[in-house]
Image 1 (tube, rainbow, N blue to C red):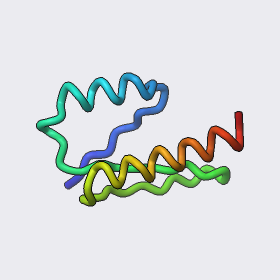
Image 2 (spheres, helix red, strand yellow):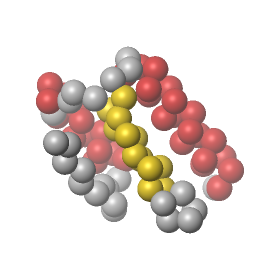
Image 3 (cartoon, helix red, strand yellow):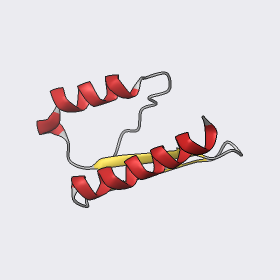
Length: 68
């Protein structure tokens, strides 16, 4: 069974550093989205990491350009 832990309050740099330090332990990359109504949807992907990274960067860039 998958164990899900909250990263609330964790900086992107901390998440990245932890991933680099534990790269050999990563099986898949997970993504969670918190919607304005408070709902959180989450899942993981076994797709190629570079493809998933592009999706994450595109979503982040769009969110930041719309809100900051």
